Image: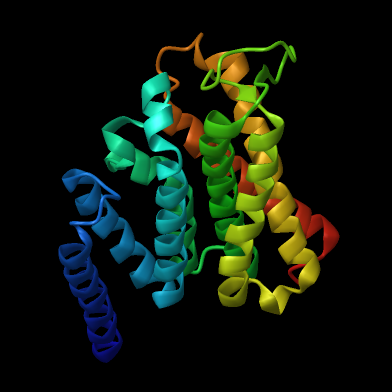
Length: 252
């Protein structure tokens, strides 16, 4: 028992040390604020400690892809007043708004709570949904020709809560497929092509749910921040993907 505890302690110490080193090397990149890097290090330690390098790498690639698409057309979005604040750099609230669902699922897996294949499917779906949202929002704001409110289908300015466009919607589908493709080799291949397709579809649909929630409630409820909406979206994606997987018998 002592040897097992020592091994676990070493594992977490390695996870912490590796993330501290990587954050120290990467903090000059224009991806996160200084505080954002600290919280990303905490998140990375949780992911590496619970899921190993695969969990860490999958979410690191999400961060890179999301940051890159955020910077597309940044100058024009800034002129229009609809760009992400801080030049696209993410803060602590963005880190946890995007990844809190995934972090909780990773902890469940580490503690042996629930079916690991099912939880890994939910983990992947949460990040597929978030990258889909980022792709749709950033590309839609920059290249969306006609932006409409999802509830009324009436034209609204780009960047309005609950607004969608054809270009942004297509980009959301691309983001979900891309994130699923990134994580599938690490987490989903053993569950078959149907599970992979399910994650990609749910990731996309969760983005529409997020737009619907934004249109209905975000401007009416003062405490319903973008970060909280992101957390609800990723939780929705994870839970719905797992529920369908159980119903379809995709996790054995």
